[in-house]
Image (cartoon, rainbow, N blue to C red; front, side, top):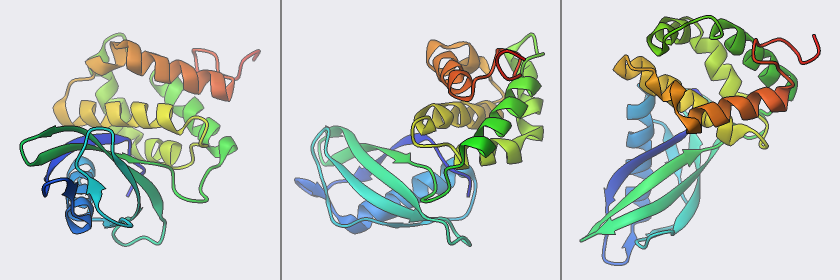
Length: 193
């Protein structure tokens, strides 16, 4: 499983709390659906309070992998007996590698610097899937949120055939943050080079 960004969905909520088993099962289903990969194993320490802003820290192990990822499940709204929540997966525990991350960032930045229209990005994303997965999987904690924003936008673009998210302020801000973090100019080359 590649490292994931943020995802939203719903889970049935018992009055006052979403049971641990429901949080684990729903989170796993959300993540499997978003990635198109096998159902991961999600382990949470207890129930999730059914109130807006409540969160729980869980651990995800992708199917067929020994890597472990931190997961934060946060309730963002509640209606009747349904809690709507957001699942955020962090980088693999112990996998941060700034040098590898920045090499991948430079490769992606250079590959995506030529297209004139957002739709031209989709085949580039498809042909760089492994680099994108490695990029997010090795993101140091200081930049993992921006990397997740970019990779999530890529996933949506490839799935929907629409890459217009890459013209939005949120995605452009994440791209700038990665370039600054890695010391890249807008053409993907190291600054000053």
